[in-house]
Image (cartoon, rainbow, N blue to C red; front, top):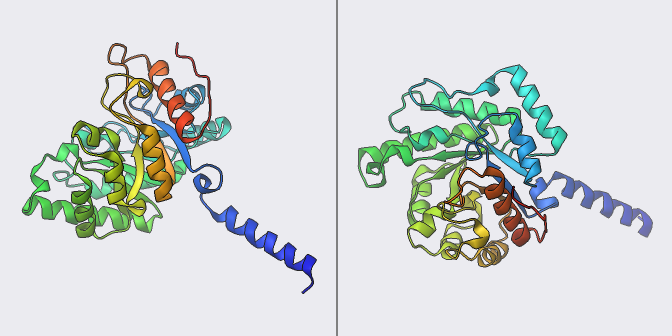
Length: 300
């Protein structure tokens, strides 16, 4: 083979490999999103324009409230809303990296007999919206399951089943446990499903006075599905002395982790309902640090 043909083959081969990589790897190591329910836009069409307005790359869409309902109040089961939401997101260039089952902040994943039906509902909605990660908080399940015993064994069994469901669908479920990194690693080992990873929350670590960077390194790149990059409401991220996000970035760089940073809180406690101001400021600050991008966002 002559040199010109060899160069052509190498170029085509390299392009094919790059095209097959996830968008976050090819175009941008870190991408920034925000939670729709925290922006008071849970499954509202306007969430995509709001995400565009605050310069977010994507939005984490919630499955809807649960409460005493059998299933999530999820309008995205209906073909009309599926098409409308997907078309609007695509037209504005807003990605949906993840779907959230925020109902489990208050409801127990251990006590819901139809937990598999709820997980399946989420996985199907993720397929519609092109999301890869599901957010599953375990806060509503109490603390008993964190210690050895029947509740713990049942949690492990249910998470394994949910993880295998996600794996079969080509998805990942990121769990928020509030456990430290070593306890999370032990839990993942017991669950024994590649469909379950940790949805790391900076707020949990900071509130419990744990070293965020040390925890990230302990967990390891492959065990972190996604990151909620915000803290308990006090001030916006750019004004918060409780965390050094530049140091966090250096840690993630060294780990070669790539993925989505999702703003959940870090609202100004004196002005918590100023959605555009709080979330716009947080998104801009994350982009400045993690993407070296100046969005020049000005809060209203």
